[in-house]
Length: 430
Ligand code: H79
Image 1: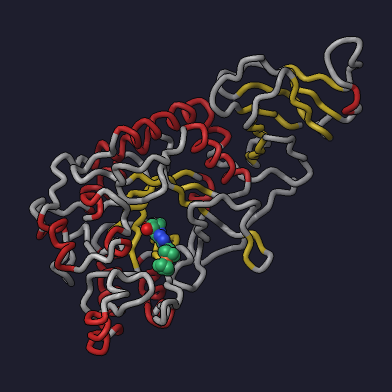
Image 2 (image 1 turned 135 degrees about the vertical axis):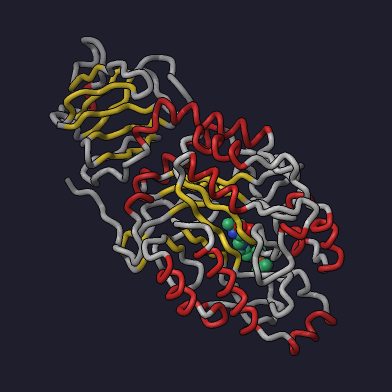
């Protein structure tokens, strides 16, 4: 059947396209400010004033095994951790900086134990690494920089040598690629647009070609994202759901929507915009229905824990996944010949030839599938394998179904009560 295949890429995305669901973790000094991971830029905080977060970084409750269990129970198959975010703080014992976790009151490596714990739970390992660095002495000011309005700081750009920063980026990336075993994903963030009278930063500044060559020499199959300004394995729409399978030059590509629980990525205590479990499940389903993945973020607290709101979301999704993950793993967009009814999303498993109908708005009694007559061998609710009866072109007055849909309309007879947040009907195709 006509299943869309994305364009081939340098790395190996086969497992990634089957696993579909990952956990993003944003953990750094900004967890203590607890008001967005961009707090240093948003509030234009100097290095000196930001130092208090470094001096008080002590996530005493940090238990990577608990994080890994929470991810696994939510149905996530891979994770991506911020090794360094834009603030410049490093979660591992890098040889190239003192601005790292081992020099904080916590005093221990965070990254190594995390990698180990997630691997133990069977999750694939990904590293996020910021291209921006608001702490490095050679990193010049740009439109995103916390010191973009500070004349004195900008004046010193003359003494800054961005090629030294490029070497730092290279050396640290090399550490990440060589000291933690097999790394499955490398997620760079991001190339800066010009603005406010400052130049942008892209592939020439980062020396992206050189970086990519080195990364692939150590980790040939690794999946690399698109933000070095040279497309590699995945496109990464941030905080939006694409309207259709993401395309580059008209060709469908491998893609992953990165999404938050509440808007920010770092722990934000007072944020009120937490998404419901139902919305989060729909976003995951929507991604898979368009041939993509979703990576959902948790920003742990300064104590080193997933807070109760994040845990409740993960547990809610996990409960749904327990009954319905068959419509996610190994699934992709349905062949185009199948017309999706209103308020629904299709996913399709090419290996089993089953089509999954996700009903976003539960209708009264009937779900009509146009053009499906003769194509479905059996239908059931996925969560409990209860049969869904099917009828074709019954006379409206005689009983059950509106004949206006015609004889090529297959009508599914639904229970009155919807079984869970996002019910899934499994269609065994002929
Ligand atoms: O790590 C998470 C975010 O912190 C990071 N990517 C995810 C995974 C991210 N957030 N925003 N961006 C990347 C790009 C945003 C750039 C802008 Fe701007 C910030 C546009 C507007 C505000 C730079 C600063 C340009 C204008 C002001």
